[in-house]
Image (cartoon, rainbow, N blue to C red; front, side):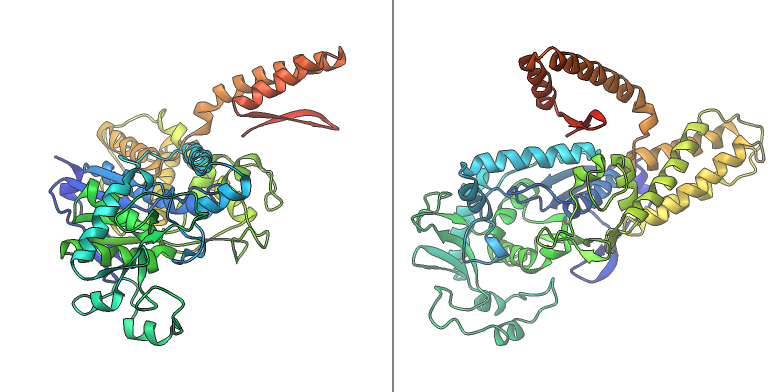
Length: 493
């Protein structure tokens, strides 16, 4: 019997503002859509935290025995600079500045996104569709919305009429906004826009002559609006009505609000049962921003090459640090905080190693079954990872007193303790014991040091072609050499 049959999972629904008992639309099956990255720059740490929250949610649903179709998209067109309907597409702007084809930009940063998530031990989604791969579906949705009278064409662009939609529906129900107040607080358009109302949003934008990302449509050569892609991809792979839609808190308005409106205009029904939003990550108590320099990239945590860090940290330590806060809470990153997390992570891994050598007895002095349920209770309470971690450290205490022979456990309870610790530490939280993979790391370091020695000898012999060849071939496989006063060091990039 699947575990979910014996557990009651509650999810905080952003739409209702309450924790609700999770009931999937189809017994034993979960459809989950999460808004993925706009691939015009390196993935930042806040993105990693958001996607990690949903990685753990995905892992726990699988742990409970659900069959999960997890769809996480790649936005490779349509996301306008400053998240408004006027201006330049973020990817097109990057391509113009760097004199690249837009798909070169997309490829570069999609690869970076995948590499970072692999480093942090993310499970891949079931489907990872791209916006450019679903232009036809988006055009068909625009046609349907026009047929309802809610979409209108103006000078080759198509807009969603929010006021018309709001006559029979509620635009603003997810973000708690009132359409009349929004209209009253918005400046008059003064005839400078094709929109009927300031709050209307683009379904299709006519491309200006200089715009390099464009597709033919019944209205113009242009490109889809940012909000449209998620409606097209979520409904294609999960149906018009599915279980969970997630993303960062910053997407609640306007992106997710517009998604709801588009779906309801097309299908006449609400698209999602449970809306979930992960909160932001700050750095030393301030908002992360490249413009102010208060910023750190995920890879800098792993290399230690940041003025905000005293040393490098492993991916699992960084992951453990992030999971010590609930996904709906703001998390502040600092050197002191991740140093403390590293100590806790090491304690946890030391206990996991001791677990394999604990002997069983004829009786148990510990209530393993009740403790196991407390672990489930934590995750059943809106995926409360910090409470789960607190319970796992109670498991660490059990392991230590059993190792010291201050307590006893039967073979059956020992098996339950082991299964529970392994299940939550490795499968649900996605942590990795680096000591178990340390032998491979030692071997890698030995090989690289040997090549550094060969390179140094080549330089001494003025064989600079061989020296450069060793450096370049190591860089090609992700190992960067750095020459300094103390000699040559390396880092994995």
